[in-house]
Length: 169
Image (cartoon, rainbow, N blue to C red):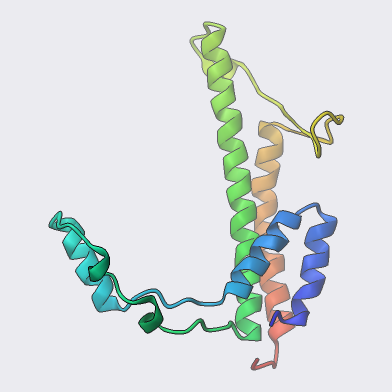
């Protein structure tokens, strides 16, 4: 069961056009913690790989004996959701930065420039194919986004503390 204290976070993310992030958080929380294998089984598997031994289906643990899914309690859901918000937004900014830098290098190489960073790429983002660009992203926007991540982390931590204060769920 999803902790209802998360609903305002989901609404906020949706208003910011981050429905994909809401879906990802829900998928993680709904799936719960799935025990995969014991530490001994993982150690044996790593050793087999290191020794380049073949692994057959018979060597794999029986799924039914691995263990049952554990649903995350409320406060753990809050912690997981906050962590996912910060990490996924950070990852998105890093991927956008890498894309812009890659396009800058590519354009510079195609133009025969010795310095790929002579060119500065601006990415135009659209919500749907064929529509007018709704946002543009360039290196300056990426720098501002990295600066804003500090504020995001602090806000998420404060929200987590506020929402879980005195609650042992």
